[in-house]
Length: 359
Image 1: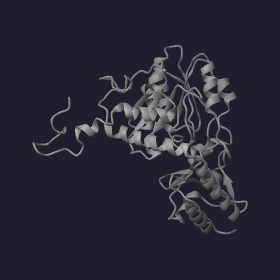
Image 2: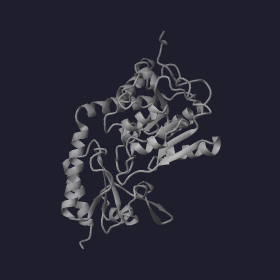
Image 3: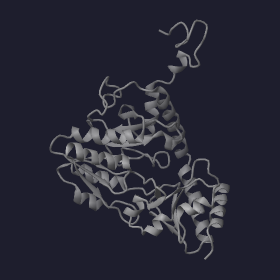
Image 4: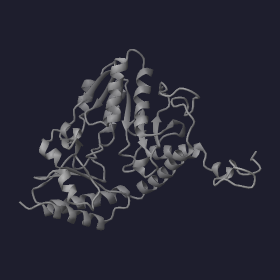
């Protein structure tokens, strides 16, 4: 039965901004269903978390102990997100888990043959991201997942960077666990989800009341889930409407515009084709990334290096790909968004070209 007046009234005659009847229209099942639809999953396979890092933690620290004493190895790769790499190191330190880190090629991709060679009967889980944060490189997830499955290992995929930019269907590649985060799809920060295939057991990382079907206890927060629901619904419509193709045209237009204006000086970092449609990672010969960005304050972009105490170090991702320090320090990551236009591309290209001194 509905209460006689809206819920959470502070005192008689004063109504709360969100009446009970409205709150009931957006139950947890609605939010779970929209996220599941975006991933090609079942609603009961979606576990809400507070961040992509927490979802990755749940995937690794939840799955590995649950596999038993004979499966004690985790395999990942060199350019994986720190949320996975650091969790793997903690598993090694606290539980004696053996960790194998696969190399990547010059394009940032893992060779499926390298994974097949590393897999053994002791492998509990393989974790390889869908798309690289810096270069947008799209890993061959289907081949990697198939190799893991053939040896009885679970496969986890951090799809935080890919969600909303390319279609995702957990059934097609046969992944067991997959991470998405709301802020990459324009949802509020602090909302994410882990897909957990039916039948996969996870040791809880938060114990208590058994919320989220067991692996993540604690009172659930409605607002983040509703935000993720809205983002998943909008994103699904954009993907169906051809957004990836539109962004690819704009991204390639920016690349060609820069390469044409700076002949022989623009180098693409990462694969030419197998990458996200919105990501362009380039190095401009003879220029450091942070110096170039300092000359174009009208552009919001990121560089391929980390600054610590005023000293710039090459990006670990680009270093793992075998890029020379000078090229890695010169890297720029130019990312497009859902509102990017052809005019924006032209403005960015003009500003960047103007900031590069002529030889």
